[in-house]
Image 1 (tube, rainbow, N blue to C red):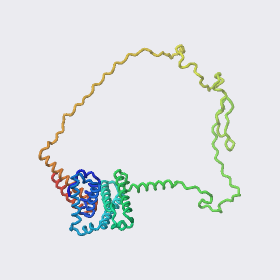
Image 2: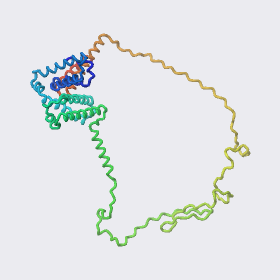
Image 3: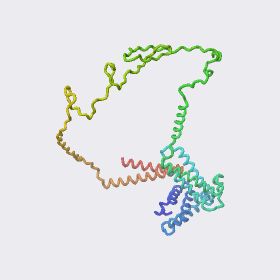
Image 4: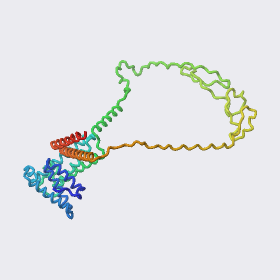
Length: 405
């Protein structure tokens, strides 16, 4: 098969499916074959090959590749499955649905450490379930969708709606994963536990509830309870407060009223109302030792220069002379910081060091490529391929580390 043309590399219905087909060429040839069939149907139904020689050549090469795989005798089991559309449908559906349930399980145990791997797995599962459109796009009476789905879908239309629902679920979960909206494992349990602790603390009371009736008191019997018609014993009276010291009576008026306690004796006195009017004028003898200040005789805007001439306290009018202005302060000179004379010298790059850098960069790229192959194999649970790619990556990494140290 020829390389993918530039005009098709941005098509979401072509480039991802070619990549999935190459990934499963050895692990699952049947699913890999139908990924190519999906791309061929998309190109031919949308007439993308018309008027574009590169796309036309790629389409012819892809057709030859699919015919070669179908007619190959290397694996008779693969050849038998590809010859039977019902077996092919069952195998592709089982592969995609197994990945679907695995994605949901990974989402339920998501802890935030494998976001990139989980996103790649969700995208791959979306591609593999989309391949089933090859079987539902045309009316084929030989296909039993009820048998494939375990009785959930009786017809082609029900099966197509079922697949669309699963694709919608995967796309929604992928969007939540990208936006970091999926709760991490353990957060929901902690929130529920905190809610239970709060409810228990609200319900619990530090004080026991009071009994509604005397009969509810523990240890109380009917024999010890007095009859209702009998006279209740008198409770001891409240203790008397000590007498407060009597204040001398004011000569201005009658004594202040006193408060009586329950026993009839005076407990303490309250001050009485004054006999004089605070606003009335009178002599000092009438008012006694208490005298309230009156209204001021002078207002703030009156001329007070002729008042109290003989007093020892002299009043001076405000000075209206204009004080000479102070000379302006000299502006400080700006401080100029001189740059440091020291310069950082780097080791010059020679041809030998440049070749070493390029060689190391290529080896690191090989390490990354093998690691990506290992991750891709793990996404499809191909442990042997993942182990082989990781071993190759670690081997190159040890050589680079030994060479650079």
